[in-house]
Length: 367
Ligand SMILES: Cc1ncc(COP(=O)(O)O)c(/C=C/C(=O)C(=O)O)c1O
Image 1 (tube, rainbow, N blue to C red):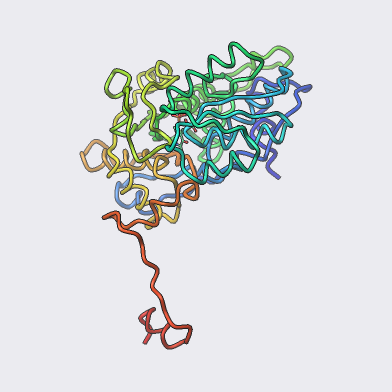
Image 2: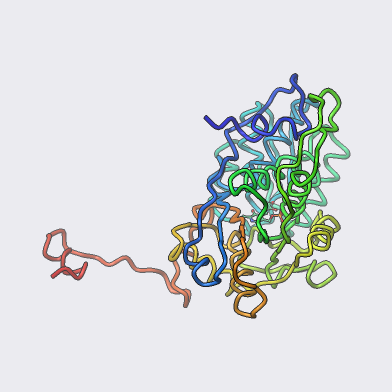
C-alpha cells in the first residue's frame, strides 16, 4: 500500500517523527512507456502521468507538504492564488486537515473541472478581475498582513513535496533519464524536479532539525537535462521579460511573471537544458497525440512538454537513442472541452443510431 509522498520519502523531506502528516495518498504515479513517441523519435520515452494524483494534478505532491507545514505552524486558514489546479489541491488538503481555504482565481480563466473541485471542498472562491499574476500579488500581501498561510509554490514546502516526482522517476527507471521535459508556468515544478535530481545524484543529509540523522548515499549516477516549455503567448522566461497580458488556451500556464523565475533559469543552465516556447496549436496537437496515440488523456497545458519534444524532434535537435521522461501534469477531465472540439474548432457530434442491432452494426461498419 503506497503511503503518500511524505512517508515514502520522509528521510529527504522537512519532517520529523512528530510531524502530523496530512495526506490523500498522493504520489506513486504511473511511469507509462510512450510507444508512439518512442517510435517517432528513436528515443525511449516515458510519461510521468501526474493526472493520477488524488485531485488530478502534480500539485498534490507539494500540497501534502504545504498543508502539513500549515498544521505544524498552527494555521487555521490557508490562501492561494491559482490558475486552477493549485486551488483544487489546496481546497482538498485543507479540508483533509480541517483548515479553511481561500482561493484567488483570474475571473473567467479557470476550467470548470478545477472550479468544481474548489467549490466541492468548500473553499472560499474569489474571482479576481485580473490575471494569475495579479492574484498571486494579492495573496502574498494577504498572508503578510493576516494570519493566513500562503500555499503557493513560493512556499518552499511546495517545492520540497514536488521534488519527490524526480525521486520516483529514478526509483522506477533505475537512474535519471537523459532528458526530463515538462510545462513551465509559475516555474515551481521545473525548480522542484531539478532539486530532486540533484539531491538523488549525491550523498544527502536531511538538514531538518530533529530529522533522523545519517547520510544517505547517492541513488542516481547522473542528472538529466531539464527541458521546460512555455506557451508562446505566455513565455516570459523565453522573452527575457514579464508578459503583462499573457494569453494562451492552456489556461493552467497563462502566467506572465513566474514566481520561481530565477530558480527555473538555474535549473536550465545547471542541467544544460532549455526553456523554449510552444504555440497553442502545437500544445493542442500534443494534447490530441497523447489521447489518440498513447492512450493518456491530459488537459492542454499538461501536453506542453510533449509539444516541446515533438518540436525539437522535427527541428533535428533531438538526438535518437536517448532516454526521455515527460511529466504530463494534469488529468484531461480538468478541462475536457478541447477533446469535444474537432481540430477546426467545431463540436464533435456523436453519431445517432436506432436501438436495433442492424443499425448499430452498420454504424460500426460490420454490415
Ligand atoms: C496542469 C498544469 N501544468 C503545468 C503547470 C505549470 O507548473 P508550474 O510551472 O510549477 O507553475 C500548472 C500550474 C498551475 C498553477 O500555477 C496553478 O494551479 O495555480 C498546471 O496546473
